[in-house]
Amino acid sequence: MGIIVCDKNKEKIEALLDKVQDKCTVRLVSYNTVGMACKEIERQLGVSKTAMNGVRYRAEPYAQKFAGAYKYVPYNTVLWVSYHNGHWTLDKAERTSVYSRYAKYELCEMTDALKEGLLAKFRLF
Image (cartoon, rainbow, N blue to C red):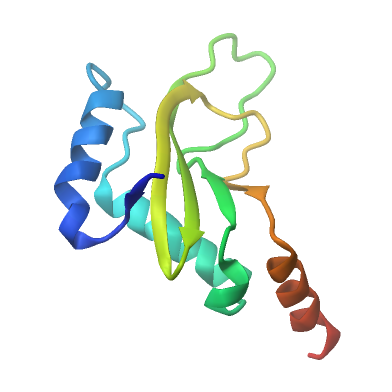
């Protein structure tokens, strides 16, 4: 289980990010970036919190597409966040090359409740 994303755990999250981003100078994330990513995922999904229980996302705040002629792809910090019992948790953070599909948020695990919530959202509008 990861670290719950809340103000009380700000120091723990910052310590984890500092460890992952040691000696890095660009494309860095902070506690605020983690919180904003979680809020953006919630906003984009637009379903109830009970439907989101168990969902897991890969968040890459600096995702972008690079031209084929660009030989070296830079690295950035990628976050894995999940939603459990009304709280977002930061499960993992690591430095990887910038993702080529340039999606900032990628759904890694979808529950049946989320599928039903999304379908219900689009059945009637």
